[in-house]
Amino acid sequence: MNNRLDVHEILVQILGTNHVYFQPPESVKLVYPCIVYNLNNMAERYANNELYFYQKSYSITIIDQDPDSEIPEKMLQLPYCSFDRFYTADNLNHWVFTLFN
Image (cartoon, rainbow, N blue to C red; front, side, top):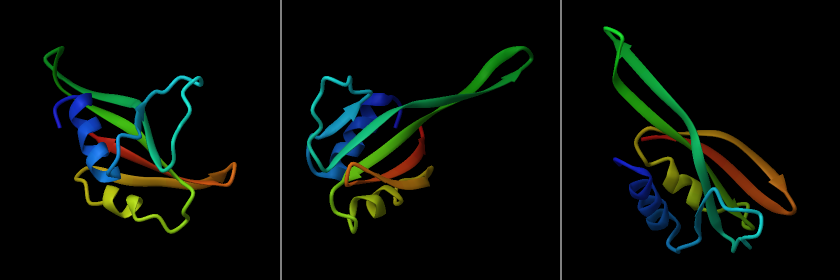
């Protein structure tokens, strides 16, 4: 995974549909189940006052009406992916992950 588009393609494969949204505006009507993700952080390392390494992390939220969804389990199989939290809102289940790229 070298860039955001690579991350996007992997998320489409995990979900099995094109209902994957990067920073969607509020005007976009989400179709469930879906994945919403955004850039979360950039960790950088310096040596000799120069940047020699940086790593992006994305916050990925799976939103599904099914509380027993199998999508979160598929996410956990990705390298450098960790589960952060679960919550419900508007009768929808939300699983939040952090994925390092």
